[in-house]
Amino acid sequence: MSDREPLIVCSGVSKSYRKGDTLITPLEGLDLEVRAGEFVALMGPSGSGKTTLLNLLSGIDRPTAGTLRIGGVNVGALSRSALADWRSTHVGYVFQLYNLVPVLTAYENVELPLLLHKQSARERHEKVRTALELVGIADRHDHYPRQLSGGQEQRVAIARAIVTDPTIIVADEPTGDLDETSARAIMDLLCRLCGELGKTLIMVTHDSKAAAYAGRRLRLEKGRLLDDQRGPMGGAGVGGVGGVVGVRP
Image 1 (cartoon, rainbow, N blue to C red):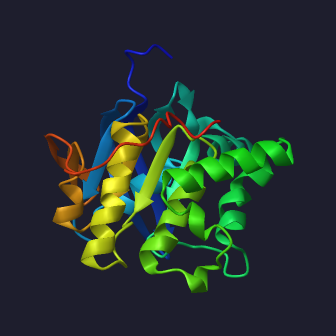
Image 2 (cartoon, rainbow, N blue to C red):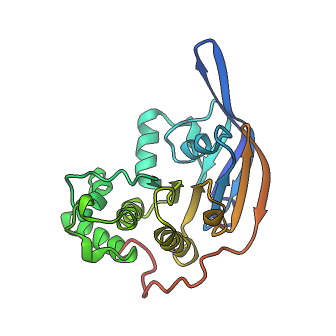
């Protein structure tokens, strides 16, 4: 893929499924391009197609019509097993409710995605350590989720999402379960991932304050893209990364 080509290209993408005798189409004929390093916020009312689009971009689902290419790969044409392999390498997912394994420490939760790849214990350790340091939670590496605050749990979840150095990061309401102070800190961190590490981030949110941090804001309604706004990325006051230029050591 040329550096000038968009990282994500949706061409006439639709997604339909049947519920009883009814055909439901949460996403219809979507055309969208996203360049590497963009921070995109997806907004819109419930049922507008936001989560459906997020699931397509993350390889959890495949379109029923149209073409979805990410990094030059026709993701919709991959088999289930090939799609699972692609997802484990290229996608980091941040959930609203963290989805941490309660019986595992922060370190072990972050290490989980790496166990799907062939690498030594030393390589895994270096990547986990770097990811935990990057999100500012290294001092809690041996803590279990129940010993962490909500903001700390989300930092662990973000470390887990970036530890494989994915092509894209998708986030589904990442601040929806946090207080305002923790939410602001998480959004500052997500801005750093884009602004300083060049990560491509697609975030679903109902929160206009969270969306304001994104450099691009898309509004979906009834499965169609109605608005595409661009502006400077927020997160004023974000500090430096201390020389870290990527998750890979």
